Amino acid sequence: MQIWKTENPKDDKIIAYFNQTIYKGNPKPGEVDQDILTLKTSNIPQGNYFGIPLRYISTINLQDGKDYIEVLFRGDSEHLKISDLQKREEIFEYFKQIIPGNVFFINEYSKLKAGKKPLIALGVLIPVFLWALYIAIEKEQGVDYDVTGQNYNSLAGIILVLASLGVKNLVLLFGALFSIAIFSFIRKTKKPPVIKQLIIKH
Image 1 (cartoon, one colour):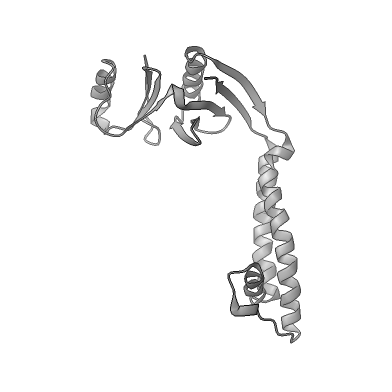
Image 2 (cartoon, rainbow, N blue to C red):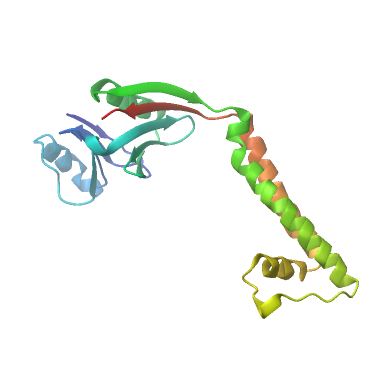
């Protein structure tokens, strides 16, 4: 058995490992010490506790810059929130040593992989912008556009709604969206994430 207690109000107050299960709990401040005593008797205190049996866990991730340890299980995930880097490293290392059948490796993202999502966003935004801009220019020149069947939930309908904003507003809107995507790409590729992973073999 191992129990960790955290003081930061944004953290999970108690993280524990026993009976081949990872537990996280957030008791009221005055109940933390009593809950730890209860856990030491191999009992789960009443209240806000969540347990993940080891047999369900597939991967445990520790990513640089994230204030949590990510536990993946059965198509879902849970975060063990620990703001203190040293304690995160300590907990992850304990799992690495104590959990049987795990395979440890370090996953270092390339710049392209790190910036993949912003690039995809740009790839979607650019053709939408160009299409809407073309129609907006046409509309300002007097060309009338409408959507067949008045189906404005379709892509063509959305484009027409965007074009109705006018060229100036359209450029301002997409300029802001492009700026966000480019800034996100630069930020993500400047320091690609490094993720320590435990793959649990069952």
